[in-house]
Length: 573
Image 1 (cartoon, rainbow, N blue to C red):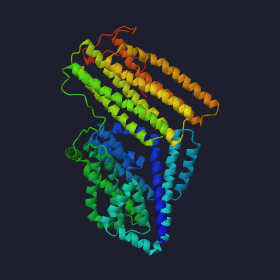
Image 2 (image 1 turned 180 degrees about the vertical axis):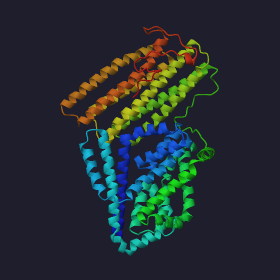
Image 3 (image 1 turned 120 degrees about the vertical axis):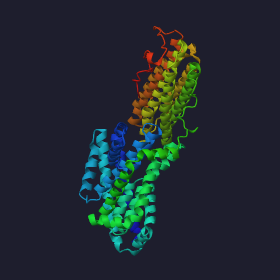
C-alpha cells in the first residue's frame, strides 16, 4: 500500500510539473517578446515595476522565469537594480494568484480546459491560437494532477507507514522548511511545491504548522535557481538581483518560522480549510515581505552593489579588450584601437558562422545556445565600438581620420547585422530542424557546406580589406557576388531536381535548404560593404565624393549600398 501511494504521488507531481511547463512555454511562445518589451517600458519607478512583476508572473506562472529574464537585463545594464528588485517583489506576489485560483474546487473546469486546448492546438490555423491551446492544456493538466494527488492519497489515510513517514520528515518546522526549499529547487517551481503541500494538508498527512513551514521552504527555494544560473557568469555583479531576492526570502523565513503557531491560529480563524490555509499564508507572506522591502530598496541596492562589485573577467566575450581610454586626443591611435576591436568582432562572427553550420548539420542543441550567447556579446561590442568612435569624432579629424571613423562604424554595424541574421534566422532554422529531427540528403548537405565555405572565406577577405584597404582584393570581393548568385542558382536547381526525383527526405527539409541559402546570401551582401568602402577611398567608384565631417554633429549620411546601412540602420534581420 505504502509503495503504491508514493508512486501515485510521484506520478501526480510529474503531471503537475508537465502542466506547468506547457503553460509557461505556451505563454512564452505567444507573448514572449511582448512581455520583454513591456518590462522594458515600465521599469522606470519601483511602484510601476512592482505592478509589472505581479502581472508578468501571473501570466508566466513562474517567478523563476521572471527572475532569469530580469537577471539578463540587469547583467547587460539595460535595467537598474532598484526597479529590477521591485519587479521581483511583485513577481513573488504574482505567484500567489495562481495558487489562490487553484485552491478552490475546480473539478468541472479541468475537462473543459483540456477539450478546448486540444481543439485549439489541433484545429487552430494561427500560431498564437495553437500556443494558447497549449496553455489551456497545461492548465487542465495542472487541475487534473491535483485531483489525482488527492485521490491517490485518500486510501493512504489508513496506511500507518505512509503517515509515519510524513510525520517524521515534517515533524520539525525547520526540517520541513528545508525539504520545501529542496523540492522547489529540484522542480524549478514553487507553485508545484505549494500545490503538493495543499494536497498533503487536505489529506491530513501534514499538520497545519508543517504545511506553513513547507510554504516557507517553497518561497526560499524559488530564489535558489536564478542564483545558481547567475553564478556561471563569473561576474559578482550579475548575482545582485538573485542574491537580493534570496536575502528577501531568507529574512522572511527567519521572521515567520518562530511565529508559525500563532499564524496558524490567525489564519484558521479566517478560513479553517487546510488547503485555503496554505494558499492564504503564501499570499500573506509575500505581501508582508513586499511591504517591508519596497521603501528601502534604494539602500538595499547600494548594499548589494558594495557586496557584489562589477568585475570584468577575461572570459566575458562582451568586454572590449582594445578600446583604450585616454587616447581620444590622438584620433589615429583611438581609431586603431576601435579597428582592432572591430576585427575581434569579425573573428567572433566568423566563429558563429562556423558553429551555426555545424549545429545545423549535426542537430547540436547545445551549440545553438552557445552561438546565441555569442550574438549577445557581438551586440554589446557593437554598442561599445559605436560609442567609442562617436566620442573620438567629437574632436577635430582630418579627411583620412574621418573616413576611417566611418569605415569602422560601417564594419561594426554590418557585423552586428550578420550576427542578427545568424541569431534570428539561421539559429531558428537549426532549432526547427532539431525539434523535428530532420536530416538533409548527402548532396544537399555538401551544397550547403560549399556555399557556407565561400561565405566564410569572403568574410575573412573583407577583414583583410578593412585592415589593408587593398583595392585589388576589394574588386575580387565584389566579383564574388556574381559567384554567390551562381552558386545559389546551381544549388537551387540541383535541389529542385532531387525533389522531383523523390530524393528529398521531406518537404520540410526542402524549405530549410532554400531558407539557409537565402540567409547566407544576405550575410554575404553585408560582407561586401567593406569592398565598397575601400574602392570609394581609392576614388574608384562612379559617384561624387563627399567632404568628410570634422565633428560628430556635422556628419553627412553615408551612401546606402548593398548591405551597407551605416546611419539609418533600417535593414535588420
